[in-house]
Image 1 (cartoon, one colour):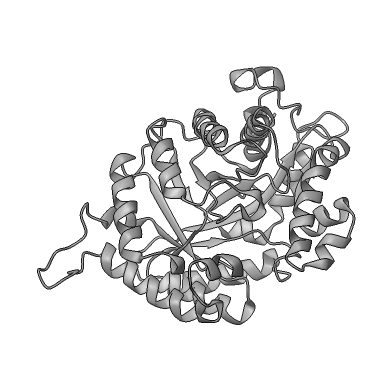
Image 2 (cartoon, one colour; image 1 turned 120 degrees about the vertical axis):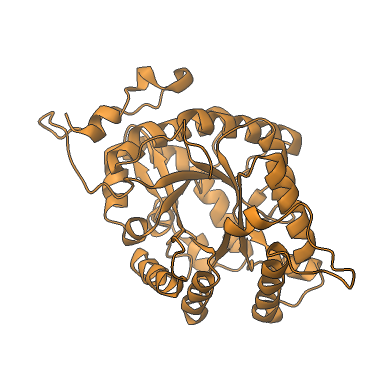
Length: 379
């Protein structure tokens, strides 16, 4: 049996008794299959959407437990999404606060923001909060910043969305200066605690707009920051895996000599025993997201069937082998250094979320060459 197949546990052996419902990867003759090991030597992270109808207190408590569960499975990182005012029914408007709580209940897994909308924040205050969280977590913070597309949030914070590009550039420059230890006033005072560790683990999320995405990718590279790419979906300006691979090439070309590339590529997966069962569990969440997009004026996304929405969303759902086959041929995944999995547009229950984390780590990722890094120390 291949190493990848050997690494796949049966559902009965799943961590903590969680039955993933998925069996090892074999062909119709019972022989193990092979595919490109696109995750060999790379990191695996998960993006947490707290978009259920649970109350905030319950959702935050579940987030802590889900991070603990992911850490026990060997995930390298966990990321929480930022949404203001329950956009998409999310609960997390203050990701650094939530990650501080999670930090106290975990010891190894890296803690990421996915994505903190920097132009709506004071960069100095972000640096102070991030540096404090980095100390509390033992140097585990991964700070991803982006410009954020939601007009309602910009209006609420008294900002004009038309100024987004200029505000983004000035905010990033200011954050870099503060984290690099620049004097902040006439007294020569600097950031405390030091932001040096956060500076080394700073990431920039690019816009999906093709007219600016390449320039932003190069700017992230030139700054020595990591590059974060959102999901390649037809609903995201038709951004394709191939287009994202081109952005990664542009990013790598701009990196200063001696700086290792850091490229986080996000993909939606939903492993289950087969496609039909996965689809049955995804329909309600798909319709929920379609309703939200329709309220934003995205009629094309709102008017199709849930299954068509999922297909055009490029959500990979079904058995582990089929999901792995698709990811293995994904140019963006191949070019990245870390795969960030999420489970939208589902709104899984707590137990289902644990099953999905388990199935992805034990049944999907090993088929692509990933190995859990349970004993790995954070650098």
